[in-house]
Image 1 (cartoon, rainbow, N blue to C red):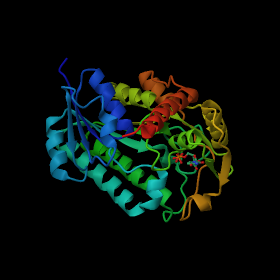
Image 2: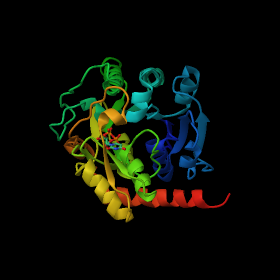
Image 3: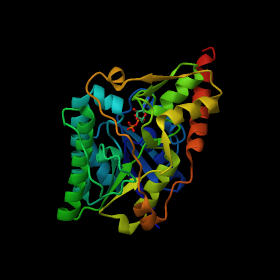
Image 4: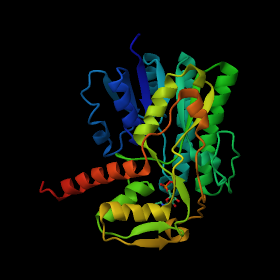
Length: 331
Ligand code: UDP
C-alpha cells in the first residue's frame, strides 16, 4: 500500500499532536500546519525529528500556504480552530471569524484538489439540549446568539453545513466528528477546561473552583481514545459524507469530579462553589447534562472508548505532577 501523507491543521494542539503521534506510529507521513502559539512545541516532542514528519508554522487563514500543503498531501484532518469556552467568551469576534474563515479556506482547498477531509466539530453543536444521550440527529437547542457560547456553536454548525454542502453538491469526501469533552495529557489549563484546571488546583493545594452548584453532568473522553476514533474513521470508506459523535458515555457530575480529583491526589484542597456570574464576565449559560450516544460510530467502525475517567485522571495527574516538579527545579 502506498504511504499516505496526511495534513493535520492544528496538529501541534492538544488533540492534533496525539493524532500526529498515532499516524506516525502507523507509518503515515504527516505535515502539520499550526500557528504555534507559545508552549506548543512541547506537544510535538515525539514527532519532531521523525523522518516522516514536517512542521509548517502558519495559519489556516493563509490561503496560499493551505493551497500548497493541500496539493502535496493525500488527505486532511482539519483541527485548527479556536476552542475552549473561556477563550470563546473572552474573544468572541476573533474566535468566531477565525473558526468560520479557517474552515472555509481549508474545505475549499480540499475541494480544489479532491482530497478527503475530516472536519472537527463539537458537542457544543447540541447547545442546551440536556436530554441525552444525544444521537447525531438530535435537536440543537440554543440560547441567544448574543451569548458568545452559542455564537461558537453556530460557527461550528456553519463549518458542518459547509462540509455537508460540499459533499452533497460537489462530491467532496468529508467526515465530520463531534468531540465530547476530550481531555487528558497535553490539554492546556489556560482556556478554562475543567480537568486540567482542577488537577492543578488540587496539586497546588488551592480550592477547586466548581461553577454553579456542580450538579451539571459531563462525559469525559480520553484523548487517546478520541484519536483512535479519528484514525479508524479515516480508514472506513462508508464513513464518507457522515457525521459522528466521538465520546465516552460514562457520566459524572462536576462536583463528583472535583471530589474524585481531591481523593486521587490526596490533596488538602477544598471545593468552592463559584456562581457562573462571577466566573464569566458577560452572560453565560451552561448545559445541565451532556451525554453522547455513540451507537453510530460503533456500528460503522466497531470503535468504542477503552479508557475510563479514572484513567484520564491518573494520566493527567502524572503529567501535572511532573510539570510542577520541573518548575521547582533550579534553572
Ligand atoms: N467548570 C467548573 N470549574 C472550572 C471550569 C469548568 O466547574 O474551573 C465546569 C463548567 O462550568 C462545565 C464543566 O465544568 O459545566 C466542563 O467545563 P469545560 O470548560 O471543561 O467544558 P464544557 O463542557 O463547558 O465545554
